[in-house]
Image (cartoon, rainbow, N blue to C red; front, side, top):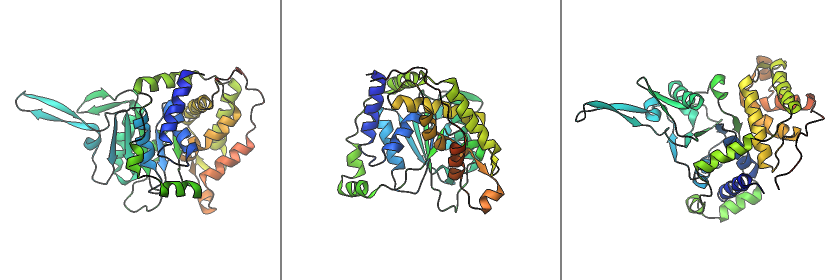
Length: 321
């Protein structure tokens, strides 16, 4: 069994100690982390969004920071600032919470567009720019942002160009009956979190990423992904389809997803599973779609049904196990 694959399984098992009944969400979040992307979780309060991020940071022993976004949060509150040191006679940089491995941006849609842009620029560029000086963020660097889709009062929707910087957008949803009973009978989230053990570190995460990147993807699969992206741009209900950045994100995600399934090659089913989470937040529907109440999810499902899957994709067939 591949060592990096085993380590990834250990990380997910630790996260599942506190995130009950959401194995698919844990796996998709892990895939995005291994693919080097950032995650947007869009859901109602109280379903475990913050718990998921905290558990991942603890299981991988990552330096993490959390900021609760509000309308008065300024870019300097995230990036840091320089202050004059009288005794030394120079300006000193005071780093903001963004200078960490895993940054949790809670309710990102409740802060100003200026602050949102500052955060998303760091996500894209990988460095912080303050007073004309740039400083690289730690490696690895992961942003997990949350937003509540209900209750739009006082919120600032992320522009489509900024949403595109999140590799995936997923919804955790409410737990099923059995899982919620287990949650109600179980320990408090704080007590449960204390049971999460560090089974990897930042160095091991980079090694897992490198291993996932080596996953083989046949040219036919790449062509399939490109055709899916092209279909979103040509759909009669879509005003703005998936950009090439989205195509790249999907390619990276399917490789990480295949890796987490114990394979060193990608299948069309991997694409079918991952594509909705990569695609939905990147689509801008037109007026006709809004009038007829067609959702992004419905458009993606239709495209997956219409675009033919490749018949040949087997480049390497050996399993990790």
